[in-house]
Amino acid sequence: AQKVTQAQTEISVVEKEDVTLDCVYETRDTTYYLFWYKQPPSGELVFLIRRNSFDEQNEISGRYSWNFQKSTSSFNFTITASQVVDSAVYFCALSRFNDYKLSFGAGTTVTVRA
Amino acid sequence: DTAVSQTPKYLVTQMGNDKSIKCEQNLGHDTMYWYKQDSKKFLKIMFSYNNKELIINETVPNRFSPKSPDKAHLNLHINSLELGDSAVYFCASSQGGTGGYETQYFGPGTRLLVL
Image 1 (spheres, rainbow over the protein chains, first blue to last red):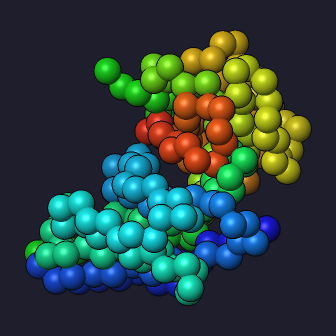
Image 2 (spheres, rainbow over the protein chains, first blue to last red):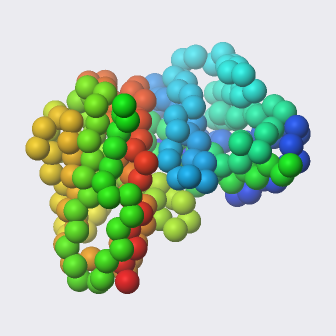
């Protein structure tokens, strides 16, 4: 069975600080997919990134970056120079190769203070 | 040009009532989903349809019945509502065909409060 653990329940930072969100996953599959979603206070779920298990390259998109390490089963997310608009709940999720089900972590609430 | 839409956005009702939530996607996707987000923000899949066929049916009370009249629509009907059904229900869609590889795009959610 798959499991996603986001050990940090809440993180509070001051604007312009960097913040890293941890995601650790468990799966016995060799082919799987990892995702990050953002849920701002307005409530919708916004897709941020998808990574497959064979691609361990780190990814950067603007102020967002992701570090995927299979050796530690982690897929961490860093927000550089955080802004108030980054305040949200961030979810890490995992799916198997031929399974439509997304297994979500419990989420990390990020609060960025001005 | 909303991609995945849900109606209603808010639903307040009494215990024992029957209610429906509607979902529509205009992305041309073949697969649609219902997820439940509880008060602790935990997200769990309930159902999934691919090309109008049920492919995922998690351990959900049979008071919950999904219906997919066509590929673009997936509705959720709930009978005999209970207090514990209070949650946010999200509809999602993905392209369809390859399962876990696909990105799921979510609707805005329906906040259900059972009194």
